[in-house]
Image 1 (cartoon, one colour):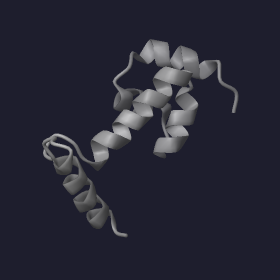
Image 2 (cartoon, rainbow, N blue to C red):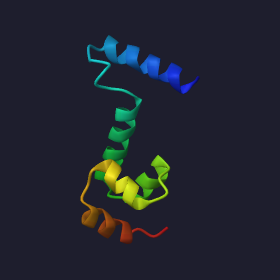
Image 3 (cartoon, rainbow, N blue to C red):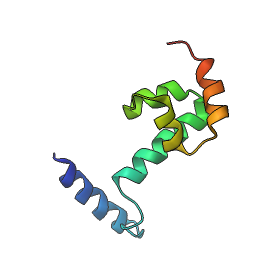
Image 4 (cartoon, rainbow, N blue to C red):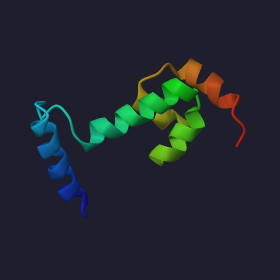
Length: 79
């Protein structure tokens, strides 16, 4: 399945449940999943790896969290 086919399928399913497909898509689901993982675990490094980011700062910006808080948590995680 191509990414475009997946996006179309998702768009149809979102419409089927009565939501506006223009407000929800593959990217918003990706961001939501990453945010939920971070909130539940506080493990910024795991989220970074899951998203495929090379820089922790990119992950912090992507999640929209405070840089100081995120970096303090990241320093507590051994890799």
